[in-house]
Image 1 (spheres, rainbow, N blue to C red):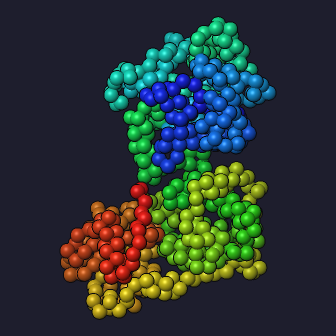
Image 2: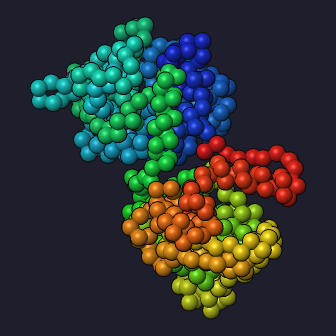
Image 3: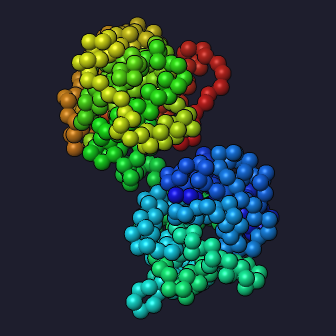
Length: 551
């Protein structure tokens, strides 16, 4: 599969003084518009199979993407069909299908691209386009069909540019701007159009040529209303930001092809769909490969898990992979909080620290958080490379040994950092001050692992403790283990009715905390941060700036 990305030509956006290439380098989230389109390309093609049409070989897009892909120059802006035609020579030897993408369509889902490719192959089509049925006034060509449902043309009937973004018109089938083409039919059709000497050659004009030649033109219908929007205006950019946030914040079944993907908190997936022991093994093999390439195998890895379904089994499967690659493993003896793994990874400078958890997500999810040698999260480019390698691995490339064999060989050892972690935490707090206060504290670990270390610390601080929701329940009582205000009614009632000084709640892996004061008031995160800043400044006499993210 080869991919052609159109990133040149006349500005298709609202700022004519800004080149199309510069527009594609506008920021969307923490990345550029074209980076999202490149992700789609990389899902189906290797870097040497990806071609990008640009205004100049040393232009802005080429400088941004670097030498990892190949470039085709469109010296004059004469339409999308002309841009594709410029790549004919570079792709002359290509016999398989060609995927064509626009650089300003960052919201298209990879499942739609897969559906587009599959439909093209099964229908034996000369051209298959990505379409959507929508009542939004979007500036796209309308797909025209005959009475039998056969596509006969794509008419450039753009939506009313003056209409509000969410205004409604009659339901129409629109051409979204992604195609799969048979090069043997595409190049002659474009050549025929070029001979007509039109001022601008549109890629959609190819449809009519192919229909006239009795070739099959198909469409795959995109189903997500958000993905059909291109980004050509500042309003589009704002809407795309909202869409991106929705996708990031909502637990996503993004295993549309059973892929491993890292998000802001590691890899998370539905158990039995994306989170499988097979995927665990592939991901751990990719991590092992990274360790071996960098000569860090003697640093070993630390592996832990929380109370979720398949957590302990996944930790065992991971240990078997690393041991089979001659990488020493310290396997934690019981379910533990994520901060313990973070601490131990940095304290011992393991090559990686791993904990199987899906944090505050519902019970049907599990996942993996990976920490670098200093306890930090790996950078995005590193996790992208590791995930891409994991997704490319076949079962025959995964090296595995039974846990018992690995233990007998001394490559897997049982580890326990609970006391060391508790000692480290107690060095950071004033135990005597807490003891003098004689506090009564209610704890809600939300059926997670929060009480494992917190109860020890507070007991040594002479606090009187009452713990609710402490038993091992991988269903988390039928709710998500997220310490949000609406989920803490029992803790609030316990604090108020029992006359407690404080209520503490933690999410499933205890890397988030919520506080209830003695009046039953929920302390927000921003309020808690202010309390911490005040304590560090006024009590600990610490000075200096404060850094926090804006997520």
